[in-house]
Length: 426
Ligand code: ATP
Ligand code: MG
Image 1 (cartoon, rainbow, N blue to C red):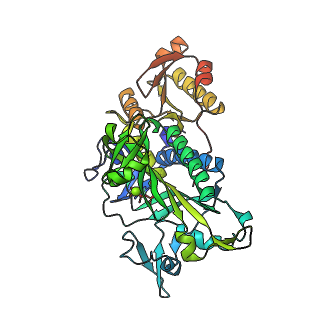
Image 2: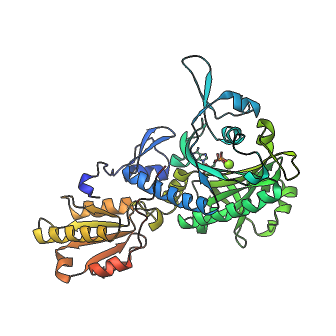
Image 3: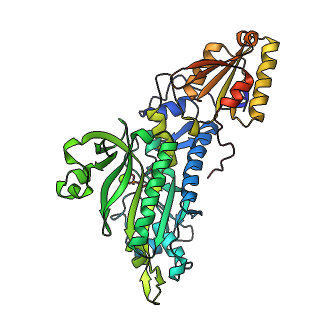
């Protein structure tokens, strides 16, 4: 893409009402626009990164048997009344609205109820199980705190997968696979080293749920990390030592840290299938409640966590896997036609080789181009100038760490990691 045609502008200053670092950087770099407190728009660069995150999650969910669908945001109160989650006293984050013809509707904050209800038409026998539908879909939550930028918003896309199993044994097998898939996702997105599978409180069907917590100063949670096992317990579990003994984590070496929950996995058991009547006939022909689990990740929260953790004083620093482009090609022609021609040629060749390139073809000063490039955080900057033209090699600067090399076009093409052009979006 030509930067001269990118309609978003970088900003030197973050808006004065924006206190969170991730939002400040993403706004300054032109990735997002703040609509109001807790509500953000994704601009072209932001959407590209968001879609890369979505693509990674989708690949890992498909790899463990997930089947993608898309449920509605508008919710029928009747279904939620059956599980006693319609009442504002039971769920404080509802956004509700009215039909013109009379009657209330909800804007879904999660989707256990409608999906369990829907599955009653699809599941009848043990042969129909297990099954793992999932979606990337917008949730609405009337969050009281909205000070963490894109980490906590009132409207956000969630990847939510739900497992429907015959019994707890079948469920536990999938739960372990899902945990592994989550580890791969956070690893691939660049957060592996700082993300801990964390014991959190469970529910009636399991002592624990598991959160995936990324150590981060801006995080809203407190966790206790066991560095040896790379596991952690969250504060609610830690505060009840009787409980956390059974996690198998060593109490003695735990270290306290602030963290952000980037994902979680939860055993639901038959809480929803009992309330909504989702049963299957087992091999003996007996009606049996389906055993469920739920598995959530917020792609924009994940993107914000990467922005928060992997940035530096100059701006964003994206890992190649979620960067909006693979290469930031910067032309410094100073009006020289040969340099311009050369830069056009490099753009054409890189693009033809499947490399995703943002081509800074603007008529601007070098300082401005470099500052913008640092702010946007594309992993590799390739500079075409009179100097590089004379050398026959281009200057290649890694955004992370600043390592600089000089390469010919063919060396560059061979060495580059390719982004996943065309990873489909939500
Ligand atoms: P938290 O404890 O941070 O409030 P939660 O426990 O309510 O989150 P879930 O309802 O299980 O989270 O949602 C699953 C995932 O969706 C979370 O792990 C997180 O990645 C993401 N998520 C939750 N709430 C938000 C939000 N307000 N804004 C952005 N992402 C969110
Ligand atoms: Mg939570």
